[in-house]
Image (tube, rainbow, N blue to C red; front, side):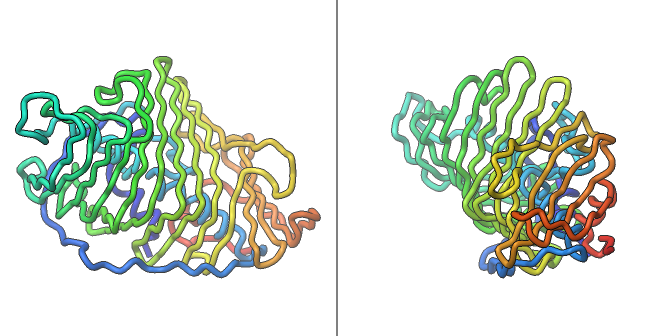
Length: 366
């Protein structure tokens, strides 16, 4: 069975620096009327039999949010300007925002302020499929000049984007904008609030859906240091028979010029894979410890990093610890996290954890 994470990982786009490809178009089916499935929300007790599966499922949410896995090809190649092997929401949002200034949104050749953009439908690069754009923006001359507070909505109808087919609706509101983001000239900052309404992404016969909200803040400086932060109230992704819902989530990535990455994440996951819900965070609940972000170089697995996974079903939990060899992972299983009652130690590795993440049936059970 293909998990929703596997589906997302085989789709298009994979670069954190967001040098983007053009939009095309072709056929697929409209997603009007599709019901949003529900993931089970009852808290799951964590034990030696399910700790690896739960750990893999939580770590795999990185693939849902940003289109790459925390394990295996952690950060795709920087400054790739051709389609990669994965779909990335950061790429997607930025690609759309960078394309819009080239579109003629007004017949007026002079500056228009406080412009309402009526629904305008156009073909996706005259190949097939359409996108309908509407919104409320500050300045049009007649090209749109991105400004904080601008709101843009795009409805996709069988719109192909570099080999993927899009259906559904995306609304974006610019919350922060500094520097020359449009032309990708660092330094710049981009903040955007996004609402996805049954947005589907299809490639190679596989379809992944997403519905919910997320806020993105991206910074790129002139020295090659990048940060990417995602947070939101609720986001549901589904496909391949799986449903994953993130609530109160936060993901934070940094990338240096020498391709050293760090990654932090926290939130709550409800999932059909684990049959319920768990919470995850970077520090032990109730402690004053400093977080240890997942850290590595280039496409190597993390050489350090810790994640705590807990549940309100009982006091149980799991502590995931990356080892210095950038290969081994230890999962300590607790019957009582607060009182340090360890009941099992699972030693695995990132490739095995990735296999478990992509295919739950591949998980080893002690």
